Amino acid sequence: MRWSLTWGEKAAGLIQAATDAGVPPPESAVPPPLPDRLVPFIEDYWTLSTCRSFTPGGAGPIPWTAIDQFAERNGYANNILVYEDFIAFIQALDHEYLTVMNEETEKMTRKAEAQSGR
Image 1 (tube, one colour):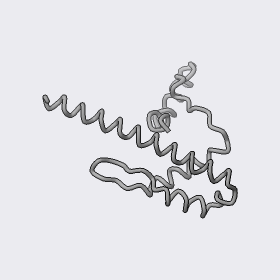
Image 2 (tube, helix red, strand yellow):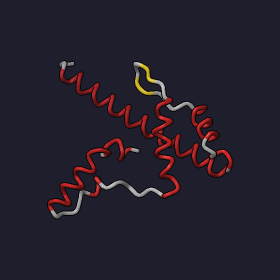
Image 3 (cartoon, one colour):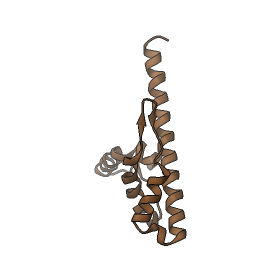
């Protein structure tokens, strides 16, 4: 999640520029490996992310009820191990997403305070 939020769209351009220059891409621009069985959960995460609420303080977590309902509707609840993996993985991704968003908000706040002379 952190890699995706940090590098995401920029990575393809960096990798292409390195390829064009005949040099290896920076290691940080290459996404970390992800087991094949978890790849669909990434897409599911972004779908579930639309269920989160936003307040003046920032993004809130994806409601557990939305995650559970999604798992039920998409057949993950038919196998308890898959269901538990799905719930844990989505919640871990969401925790990291919220951590990164909070870090970015704090960084922007400090920058604005520094520019205003506080």
